[in-house]
Length: 625
Image 1 (tube, rainbow, N blue to C red):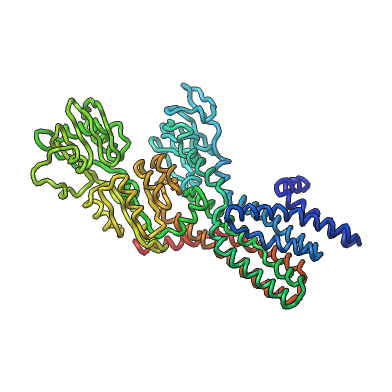
Image 2: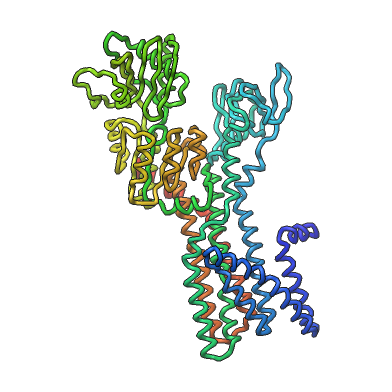
């Protein structure tokens, strides 16, 4: 018990000191030491109001309205009128409100702190046949690691021996264990449940999935309390109305105590604490679902989004294109065209490049030597391959490079995603790809419509025919095709129905993620550049989480508004009651503390108010099925 008290006073020192002073003052007053009690309570009240006044002054200097003016007025008026107990209750309320806010924020950050606390520190590395424990920062790509039951996977890797069940709930929100066998991927941060497996590290600790999540969570957890604009919406009219009621009562009655009786129940704690607590709760809830919101202002903007724009490949589609056909022109053969393309693309990280190289490997084709390779993002590349000047990329890029096309060739007959290859000034071949639309894309877009998204847009570097076909299948309102990275940025900036959110996963998406009001990156297999540029990062390969992130943001914002309005409503009602002069100012100050507690519990609903929405989503999925 004593240890708990020491911990309490260490964490909430100011509130503890005020509480002690209040208790001693009440005791002195009860035993007849009125003067000593009044001095103690008055000095404590004034010493606590001084930082409040200084903060208000700093706010006014920076052009901000200080909503603490009501509390400061109530405390100073209490001391002037000799209502020391009422003044101390207000001080107790303010310091207690801060303590309650800290407690509520700590409670809401449970999932965020859990991610940090369970981060693995050491790994069991196989050196020959000997098992050695080393710090995970020393694990190298290619090292073989032993993962035992109950242990957290330290780095990303692939199972090379054994099978087990894996709990990925802390990463993805998926509650059911997943069966893993040889050849399957293990994500760092997942928990091994029942089997002993050997894995080969494919990433260092710094580049592994879990470390990326931790970096994002630290950024999110350290963000300053936002929703300032939300509080400002209500603070000025609330303050003016409160002063008007208190002033009118004073003028009518001629008694300044009546002014105090009203003003003590008009303190702005609901405005100060409701929004930050709801915000932290919502961010924590999102983190548990594998959605990392980097800042509170990002969550606020996400709640207000009216237009959603999407990249196509890897976002709305599965992002696993396969070579569908190879067409050769002139004297070139299909395998020759494929081998030339694979030689150029072997070092590229583009998603179509991987498909070309995989197809060439499957056919056991010998790749040519490449010299002077130059890659232009969103357009293509050129190089000297096998001694010949070769151009690969979009049809427009080949035209710009002066590649001669067959007579009457326009490319409009190509109904699939395509890469064009030109060799020594002439079209040598076309490689087409098939990339299936994600199963969950249609349902995700339907949910967004129900959540109030009024306009959807797909922005892609793919050709118009392919883009139109996918947009029609998914019910997307607008399409921008054949877009370079700069064109994507312009398309987002041109949208008039704002705020705009953009969803993407690739390196080329980084500029447009920054240009949008809200950038959402699919971080499970997306690039680091995309994740760093985004405001929201979805840490698993599930596009449906986009709709869930919007839902969480909207509910969080709604709960914050509810908490503020209910707090203001209760405060105004009490002002009217206490304007009658029938109740002491000290009672009003105590009742206002109860209002603060009510507001905090309302705001904490953002931490766990989304369970009911799961049933609604299941009903929607059944209807669509």
